[in-house]
Image 1 (cartoon, helix red, strand yellow):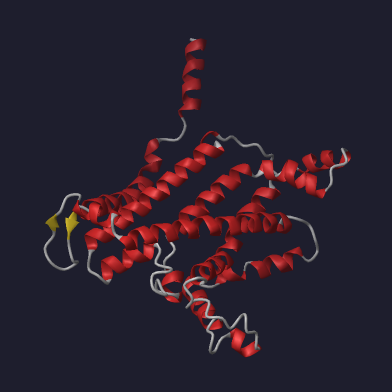
Image 2 (spheres, rainbow, N blue to C red):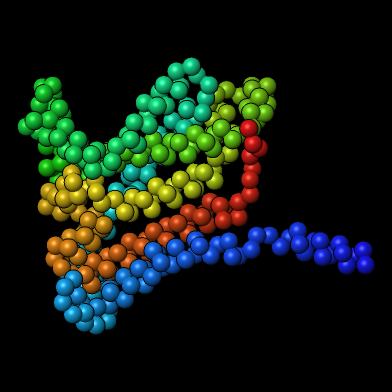
Length: 301
C-alpha cells in the first residue's frame, strides 16, 4: 500500500499544469495568427484586386513574383538592412547593457538618457529625421556643415545606409535593456574569483560576461533579425521606397503591390516569403546557439 501511495504521489508531482491553461492562448493564436496565415497562403494562389471576384491562379503568382525584379531587389535590400543593422546594433547594445548594469553614480542618469528613443513612435522619429536631414532646411543647412547638408535620403547611394542608422537609433535602447537584465543576473562571485586571479576588466568581459549572456544573445539576435524583416513605417515615411527603388524593401514592396497596384495575390506571395524567412532564421539561430536545449546557467541576484 505504501509503494502504491508513493507511486501515486510521484505521478501527481510530475503531472504539472493542465493543458487547459494554454487553451486561451491557443485560441487567440489561432484566431489572430494561424487563420490569417492560412488565408494569406491561399490568397497567394489566386488573382484578386481587393474589390472584385477572386479567381484561382495556382502557382502563377509565385512564378511571376520570383521573377519580378522589384521582388528580387527588395529581397537583396532586406538582407542588407537585416545583416548590417544587426552588425551595428549588437555590439553597441551589449556594451551599453554592460555599462547600465554597473554601479557608477552617473549610470542612472545616462540610462534614462539612452532610453529616450523608446518614448517616441516610429512615425514621429521618421518625420523628425526626415526634416533634420533635409538638405535645404535641415540641421546641416542651419549649422553650415556641408557634409551634413548632403541629400542623404535623396541619394540612392546613401538612402539605405541612412535608414539603417535611424533604425539602429530607434531600437538600440530596447535591446540594450535585454542585455542589462542578463548581465545583472551573472553571479558576482565569478567576477570576484576572476579579480583574485588577476583578470582585468577586458578579460572579465570576454571570459565571463559574454559566455554568461550567450542565451540572451541568441534570443535578442532572433528578435532583432526577425524584427528587421518587418520594418515598414520608418521606411515608408522617410523614403516611400525611393529614390527610385533604392529602399524598397520586401515589407514596403508587399504594401505597394497590394494597396497601390491592387495585386493582392502577388502581395500575399511576398508576405509568405517574409514569413518563411523569419521562421527559417529563428530556427537556425536556436539550433546554432543551442538555446532550444538551454538550462539556466546563472544564479539569481
